[in-house]
Image (cartoon, rainbow, N blue to C red; front, side, top):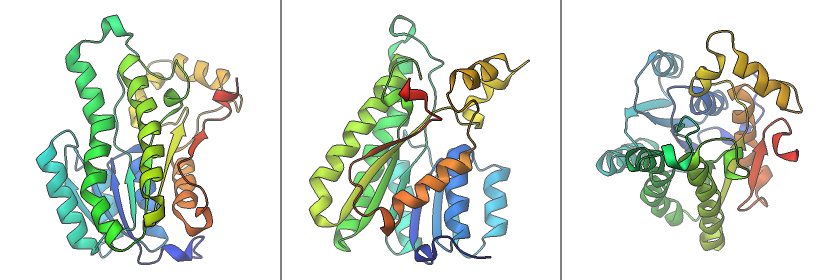
Amino acid sequence: MMKNYPEFKNVSVIVTGVASGIGRAQAEKFLLEGAFVFGGDINDNEAVKNLKRRFPQTFRFKLCDVTELEQVKQFADAALHFLGGCEILLNTAGILDAYKPTLETDEELWDKIMNTNLKSIFRLTNAVLPSMLKQSHGVIINMASIAGMVAGGGGAAYTAAKHAIIGYTKQLDYDYAKSGIRACSIAPGAINTPMNAADFAGDAHMARQVAEETPAGRWAKPEEVAELTLFLASPRADYIHGANVPIDGGWVEK
């Protein structure tokens, strides 16, 4: 099969959230390009087993709850050992907050969203970044959301976390760009993933409404976000620093 990004052959990639949705699509895309991928997720499901079967030499997986500091450290150590370092880090794992406004958000939910969506990025980045600095090269791509740009894409906690991811990514790039590190974030809109399964439940009224409110008139597939990831992680995007790139069918243009 012809490779679209031959420069990714034998490149080392770490991905969180590989058991479904965007994380799984990212892992598969990089594997198809010849990269070595170490994936983590709280679930070891059929999607993960399928990647193991298809890419037995280049894919490894470790269970990891990204809200647990010790598990994140063990995951990073195992990944760096298998890969011999890390050239691309994809912080993709995340959860929704059921669109709850602040008065319906208790501290338990707030902490769960912040720890899963935001603090996990800080922790894993800090665990992997030193190895990138030693090789004077690394690309970090954090998963934000249109909820990091406008209201209405999530509840109080989710929107706050995604806004923070965009800010953290910019500062990360600013602090380490001259050391060979490049950081960007991606802001998906309506992506048809298991995380958004509730929108498709029953008669899928919510899914149809979202599509109608999206200028492009449809939901995107996870593979479309993965394709954007390939470009942003590649040398072709070397001058794109600290950017938050929407992939939202025109949602924020409204």
